[in-house]
Length: 242
Image (cartoon, rainbow, N blue to C red):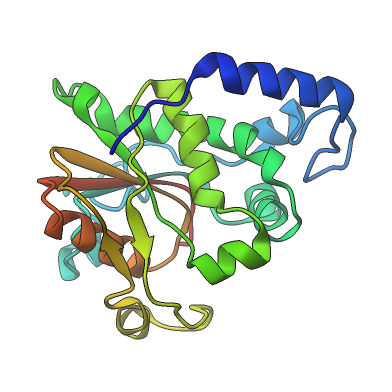
């Protein structure tokens, strides 16, 4: 079931924690916030024009609306928009968020998703009925890490854009590490890894994740959502591996 995260609750808890336990910036280490304004400003953003499918920049003088890779490959995800390339400041921030025990960084990092999700919903009369669905970790990975980074990002993003969250997408199979695998190997590795549980989901789903590399994870998550009844799947990620 989709739900909306109460703004007053997260605002109040965040303010109390910021005062009592000021955190160092995950990238520069300065005390005051989980990611300081200077480091957020330093994140390289993707600019238009962009591929209608994957969101990667395309040459401004081209007449095509899809990049060459998307013309060759089909995905269950209609459109992906990412905040920026997976390098430099953004790479360091995501690495600290995921592996450095910094769940508090979810709020500033989620602010980077505002531009991508705004580009997705711009001009869509039915966007108010869209639902955010975080791409989950396997329960064993959550137990080890202590939190699910995509779920935290989705919570903060939902509050900012006033869209509901549906957290019934589950990773039902633990997969091998994707590092070093090509697109076809990643697709095989992720095949059948997700299942949407419970009643059908309707309308458009917007998947939320931290990084897109080949799109294999998003593709398999989207297929699980489509099998559960939704009619369209888009996605937003913090970063995109070129």
